[in-house]
Length: 411
Image (cartoon, rainbow, N blue to C red):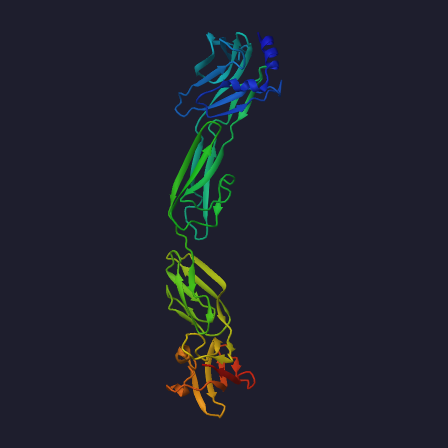
């Protein structure tokens, strides 16, 4: 019978293997026979978690119209052949053999399309999975995990039908670290003992899932976060001097704070008072925090605040006619610390004057076209102005040519 079996196997195409299935199996691999490397039979892997798991094989004829006859046999390590009778079914379209133990099985199908199907059944057991912190003490800057991922059944045995040689299918475990809620774990399926330098800022549960060919196990532990984060926002970050900036502290688990505003001033408040920048330039801002467990974190934002350079532009015409457009003779200015302006008629009569700084300068709206802030309207025509200004960046605007000239008043 063995010689007939070998000839039939040689004639069976690979597609025939798909006609043998194992309901309830977890995975399937294929044989690698030394006597015939091209011959591949399915190895069906079951998870024997209860200790009483059995296998089932279902056979369907790959051709013909049926009905068929099915004769099942199990591999014998004594005769090195499929010689142990299992069951026989005649005149049916398909056949199943249930309550099977580990080993190899073949089914001889006759009845219009004669062939033999071969399959192996093996049983896996849940692997060993353990997960914990690598060190008992928690560290401020990282979380070190350690795990165990070991297959309980390291290999599955089957036999070469051509020689009777015992062969093995390795059952290597795979693993995957995860956390809930999700946090960064580097190389979670490659490094069994990963270290993350992006530690969670909230409490998480770390889980290690271990899988073998047939079974899976998992282990987990709760991790209470001690980690901190320095974070803040600023508004506005761009404007003219003096620029008042409001800082918002968005840090996590800080108890001691140090703000460095980039202008040699420091605050140790959790939320500092609005900070005023006077000198036009760009400023780096740094926040350093420390937790009650003495973990330290720093956030430095380069050139976060920009105070604009001083600007002085002088218009040459205005129309104080009350239409809401160009009604004031007003210089375009930014970051000016002090401004004075005098306006004269062509006869030399002073019709307007202003000088001021700080809040007075901030509230200044310019010349409205009335004589010396009275209700008397200046006549349309040409007026002469003298403007002096001083910027927060120490630039003086007092050049006689650039800041003395004529403005045209139209009504």
